[in-house]
Length: 358
Image (cartoon, rainbow, N blue to C red; front, side, top):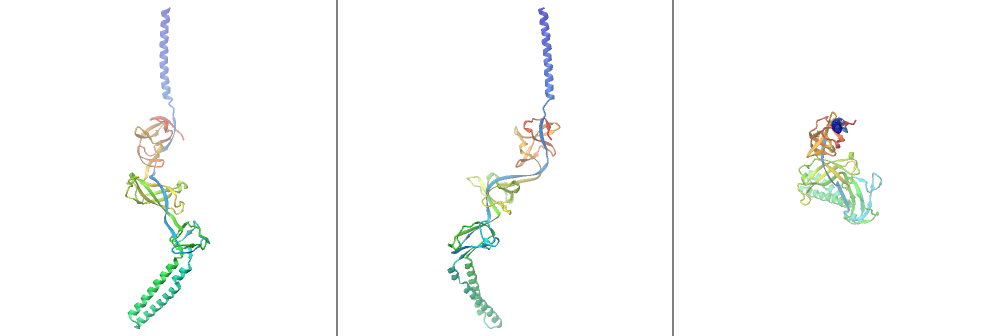
């Protein structure tokens, strides 16, 4: 009886082990068949333009500016702006040659003797014209005519000098621009010569002085386009500029070199003294395949992306080129119209099953 029981138990154990092996095999088959599809989003690779930029920062200043200084002493009187019919004020536009301030100095005016000088010039001119007429008739010698001409020229020069000296009582704008400094003085205040009374800037064109690292010296060139932006402007309002000057020397302490950028500011969106960002276009390509920079992954010293073919994501080695913002050029590895995973790539492996979201 004991022998039969033992034999029965061995048979039962063998049957159980066989069932477990079959069960395990079935579970493996089920596991492979039920591979979970990862939801992903894709984009089709297309050709587009891309530019690479080198960023720097700096402060913009007006290309044209002028400080107005009194040339002689006199009593201060601010003039009226013909466009507003009010006294000139900060921010007003003033045109080249317009008088901003007049000084009154009667003693100075009398010393010029403008009326007397005008009369002497008039008499000298009449005498010279008379001598010309007589010389044509043989009534005077060439020497007499020459002396009359010399007297007239000296009188003319004396009148020009007198006018220049009289104009020193007027402080005029040497350029067309906007008044950026205008200290207040009570009308009639006596001013000394060489006193700063105003500053004018034409900031429709600005100059930006910047520095670049030594290693970028070979790629920074005059004429390169530059995009200028300020925190108060959105991206669409970026201004255009160009690199106009480059220093050939590198500072031995900072390992930087200097350059100048001219910025077009016709709409006056920027103001002198603003701190701005400058993006210098160092390379541009019109028609290349580009992808979002974030989807190009680093794997064992390789750059890869995932390309969807049927229901599988295939790992693809790529070679990248220039970068611009969040885009990167794909030199090799991707063909036009291939579907590249742009979302959900974080958990993918080569040949992972995927489900493309619409």
